[in-house]
Each structure stands twice: as structure tokens, then as C-alpha cells.
Length: 334
Image 1 (tube, helix red, strand yellow):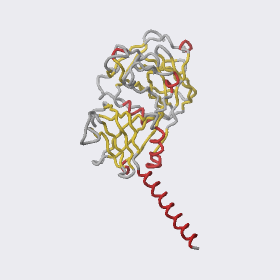
Image 2 (image 1 turned 60 degrees about the vertical axis):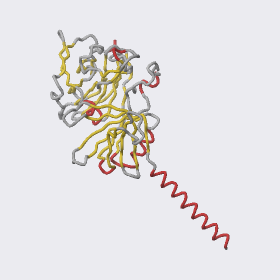
Image 3 (image 1 turned 90 degrees about the vertical axis):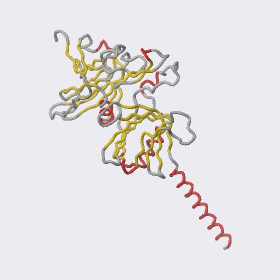
């Protein structure tokens, strides 16, 4: 009897210890390093600030934090805390599988073919309420090493406020199969970001929105020397990119610009074409909108090899906010 009671006490102690360890582990902050961050400079300036640092999901304090350490500091972990949001103030978190190549740390490192289309990173778009009551947005690119952990922790912490997008990627095609391959077009940017038309739905048409975001690469396309942010639309090292819907060009873009088109419902091949071509098959429905990004496969060789991908509305519109509206016209006869 004494042995049975001792065993029971020991079992209860072990159980309490196990539960205590599990509770402590659940309270451990999740720290993801090497995270890229984008946020608007201000409510009046939609240009996106980009930085790299640590994203922290802290269950103990119920806060999401993003911090950057710019220099060696002994009195603070971060020189700049860019974001700190209470869990309860997070309205939505949307995860899209990332389709852009991250900035290369090793300038001479070649991008492996298998990483061109799927690099394992995730984009994390977050919408939250500030103490002043305004709604703000932030976007992160989570490295492959931390992406699964961040996704699972976010699902646990934010529940039905988390959405995971079914991202679709285009595949390379022979550009010679495009019937409108040889068409020529003029292209101009809006004068400023204030001229920023936002597409609206039409009940009898399908809407496609295509954004070619600005990005950083090594200067003049070289893999040595300083990086620079490509100038929207007028960068001398970028080409026009045509967007074909089946047999006809329906949009023209350049780096840092966006456009949209209304199409009849039905089955389409949507293709982007510059030096090479990339396309995806899609069935468009009337009264619905479809959102796409164009991105360079080789970010240090802009407008050479471009990938088309379909993403969430929120992520594409976030990138559209700092892009310039592009207008274009077909040259010559139809």
C-alpha cells in the first residue's frame, strides 16, 4: 500500500513537471531572424521602407515585434524597434508562398534552378489596429528556415484571423507561340503616386490586376558593387513587359508600375513576355478579380526572365501601393 501511494505521488509529480515544461515551452518566444520587412513610410507616403531583422511572436507578452540591430549595442537588443503590436490588435494575417528571390548575401552565389520557382520562403501580410485607432499594414518575408514555425505559431495565436493563400505560378513557354508577339507599344507612367486609379469590379467582366514591383539589385545589373533600387518605369536597364490574354496583349508594364484590364469570362492563358515568356492557365469568372505579380527570376538582370504568379488581393495591393500607374498604346495597325 505504501509503495502504491509513493508511485502515485511520483506519477503526479512527473505529470506536473511535464505539464510545467510544456507550458514553459508554449510561452517561449518564437524568434525568426533574417526576416525582410516592408511598411509604408507614412499615411501620406505609400513608398515602402525595407529592412532586415528579427520577427518575434511572444506568447508571454502577447506581442508581435520586429526589431533591427544596425550596430553593436550593449544596452539594447535592437537599435530600432520598427513594429510592436498586441495580439488582440491583429485583424488579419495572410500567408502567401513567396515567389521572389531574396537579396543575395554572397554576391557571386548562383541561383540554383530549383530555387527559381519556389524558394521555401513565405510572405506574411499583417493588418492591425494602432493605439490611435487607425488600421495599418505590414509585410514580411520569412526565410525558409523559420517559415513553417511562424506559420504554425500564427495559426495557434490568431486562429481564424489567419489565411493561407493558394499561390499559383506560371511556367515557361516558347514566346514564339504568342500570336501578338511582334506588337509594339508606347508606355508612360503617371506623373506621381497621387494619380493612382484603383480598379473596380464590373458585373459582366473579369478583372485582372498585374503589378511589377520595384526591387533592389546590384547596380547596372552587375554582381559586384553597391545595390540600388530600380527607378519605377523609366529604368534604362529594364524592358517593357507585355501581358497577353490568349491571342492579344491586354497590358504593358515596366519595373515599378501596375495596370489592370477587363476581360470576358472564360478560359485564358495569361502570359508575361519580355526576352522570355512565362504563363499560367486560368478560368476567369464575371464579377471577380484576379491579382498577379511579375517578378524577375534573376533580380540582377531585370526584365530578362520574368515569372507570373497569382496571389492574394491583399499582398498584391500592398505592392501596388508604391507602384506607378502605367498607360500604354498600341503602335501601328491592329
